Each structure stands twice: as structure tokens, then as C-alpha cells.
Amino acid sequence: MTEERRQHLRVPLILTVIWEGAAGKYEARTSDLSLGGCFVDSIGQVAAGEIISFRLQMPAGEWLDVQGEVKYPLPPSGFGVRFINLSDADKAQLKLLTNA
Image (tube, helix red, strand yellow):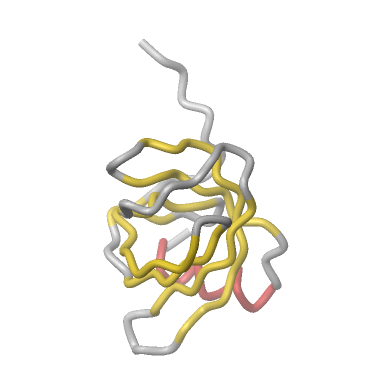
């Protein structure tokens, strides 16, 4: 059995994602979300450690612009990303979505 290393509880949540990495720009979706990161369902190729910029479409329609570090590439399913450089306002929005 593998040990859980996440600091934040992930909740199942589907949000539209537009992300851009070294290989291009893609539209995708999340399958789960936490204060620390999310899983992006995407066929786009990424490498562990790659920094990507992406936008999350909130349930009310507004966009949250964030950056993340790819932690777990799982081609062709997607990848796990850890948020980096979040503002206090971004953290507040994520807390509302995750009930943290």
C-alpha cells in the first residue's frame, strides 16, 4: 500500500481548464481539486517538473489564472499538478470550492 503524501484533501470537481506548456496550448478539464493542486484530464504531453500556466473556469463562469508544477504525468490520461505562486485571493477561491 502506498503512503498518502498530499497535504490537502482533494475533492471530485470538474472544471474547464485551458493550459499552456512547452508542447503547446490545450483545453482540458479537472477531475479533482484541492488547495494544493489538481488532476488535469488531458492528452497534452508534459514532463515531471515542468511549470505550466493555466486557467480554471469557476462554476460561476469567471476564470482563475494560476501556475503549477507537474508532479505526476500519467499519459495519455493527464497529469497531477501542484499549484505554485497562488495569491491570497486565489487561495480564498479554492477554499470555497473545496470546503477547506
